[in-house]
Image 1 (tube, rainbow, N blue to C red):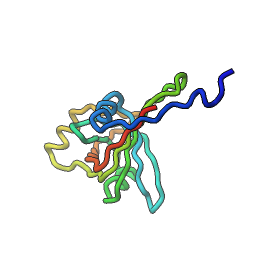
Image 2 (image 1 turned 30 degrees about the vertical axis):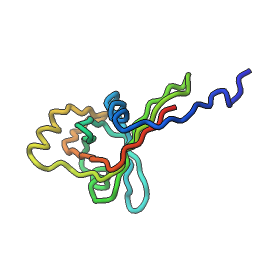
Image 3 (image 1 turned 180 degrees about the vertical axis):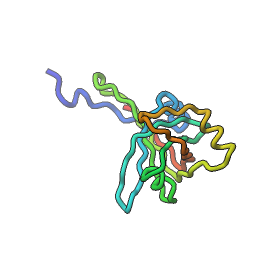
Length: 136
């Protein structure tokens, strides 16, 4: 009979280059923001551009909170429930709305998906100050 401890895996640090490689393997993450001094988390579609994340958004709470100057966090993970292995990557830094024409044209070409029926024509770039990753 297997015990709970038989599922314990060693937590491994993942270096930033590997974090960026892992981020490119999927296109859905979670954006953590502070709204009126309370944390909130939103699922978002994204694309990796160099060492930045570009997120598409509609106007509203998420967009406003992301670009008002407070730091944000962005997290992506993958888990295998059978083997209880996986990884997690967290980016922290300032998010800025892309407003210049060149940046908007480049962002529109990224073909960032969306789960909703409404257009998400605003784009946010996160150039992280900190990139951390863990693997089980």
